[in-house]
Length: 475
Image (tube, rainbow, N blue to C red; front, side, top):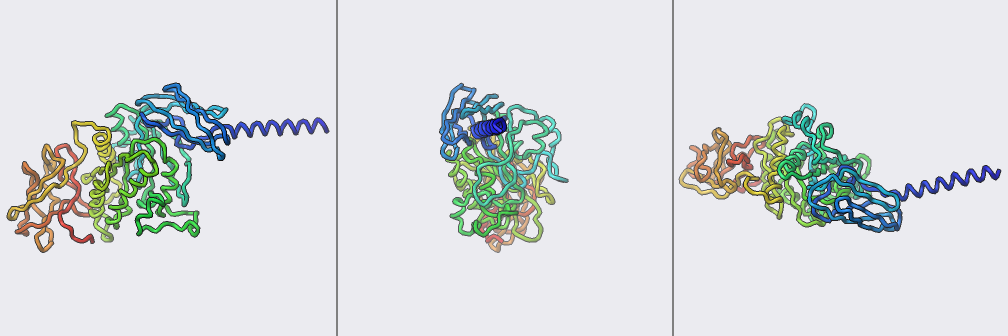
């Protein structure tokens, strides 16, 4: 009997020790792990769980320096580590008595990549919907300096702290599953700046912008109905519900060191351009507020022309709203892909153009590089001389072109507000256009249709956005 008692006690002691060791093991959220990238030259936050009231030591191999944090009554801890200029690989040791080591860590530039299906669309493409040239790009994608992480599609009525996922190295099998727009963006940054790049993709096809904004961020938009948490069922919660994607797919990464964010979304909000024009800067300000790292850069893709069918608004109004939003607050910009639309495919196959045009914005506006352009022509002024309308443009220092084709996307209207196709041609000062049906031009529109392929570019190859000079009611 005594022997049995001793055996039971021994087992209990072993169980208690094992349990204590399990508790003592530092636990990190999924955003921290092997193969990750930390933002260079900053105070980068690292956080997690540890034993209650324990001291947590974080040691970074790039400077052999240790940082100490204290776990609170719930075991939560956070420290900030000083990161050097871009480089790696490095390691990070984290311990509250039992060590955990993160390996193959790079220091470089980190960007959040978010939106709906055109951001989600992987390098391998969707079924029956390819990404142009993807097979070659995937096959040649091995690159130790680019790292990828994708946040799974999850909803939540309340903010959550973690997700299931891990950082991946840049190899064909990982690149094929990763966002094409984000990959081409990161590849361009890496090739140009010669630094490691970390890409965090958090996107969900078909979603509106409202689910990506927090409850606090949505309160100033009185037309948005916030979910009643006590009455809303959490099972099969629609991803279109306001706040639920912010809670589940943005909140877990808030505070992770980033340089900025890129965004590709808007198709799902096509019929509310007036509201969308306010929601875009609202989302940016919301994310900047919760990250608390200042007015970080935010660049987005204007939706491509597409035939949405006979119902709903002309999508040119949404493109107009996106263009106007691009100057609403500091440090944001828009990449135009008017030349990439496909009549019967809402997912343009030329994702390289989208990603690289976002990268040009970042290289010029965020990283201060000079000697090349990052935006297309923007209407500066219109003057009428008899039956001619003469347009001048910004972002066209070296002139305009139509890639050897006749300009076919301009329309002109007189006082009766009836628009007619216009003959247009490039001049030394801009664009001159006229229509035999309009003797006294009052208004001009360019590519202002649901589906149309833009044909006006600056000489650097960036397309002009659709635009109009009139203020007729949206309908």
